[in-house]
Image (cartoon, rainbow, N blue to C red):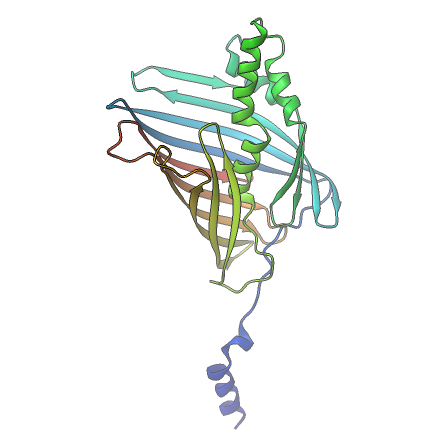
Length: 287
């Protein structure tokens, strides 16, 4: 009789045995966390009927030291530790920029200075950035001492701010951090997040549907599928973007142990004279 009762409970009430898991950040004061990034891009561009292909590889390391924890807010001293970019252009020439040492090359010297200038972010337990402080100083330090006309310096500053300023950092960062559900979830249960993506040529919203895949050893596996929606969709800016995201999260801290992000971004239509298509594969690890 007892066996029959248990069997009926299992068959009729499976939700009684469903286990919910909290998937959020639990960072420790004084501890330093890291992201090691490797991004490989293929960029196809057609301008006035001529198509070119550019390959770009970016590697970088960023550290985040938890300076304070207040309620649902983490105050993080953030610093680039290294930055390297290599570009193979359509004409066969290659460009390389890195943060290894002071350089007469403007971008390499900017990276060198950037990697010696901390800035500060406030982030909540859902991975959402509430504020970024001091990143303007990072840009200013990167271009100080340029022997160029003031107008040219301001133009360079504006371009670097577009690429590495607060909006760009927040959007790039939240692709892999604004990933956590507001409540505990069951395996295969889904939730949605939304973040703003910003660059000089793109202002869009990235909507992602995540679900908890499995628990394995010290880590939780989370998968997501994203859609990029332009804020100014029009005939002249026909933007389509998507991403597939696979994450391994530390069970205790919620920090990203590893991540793989596959993205595509298309601007314009294939039959247009001016058209671009970018395919990007990015990996992150915590060491």
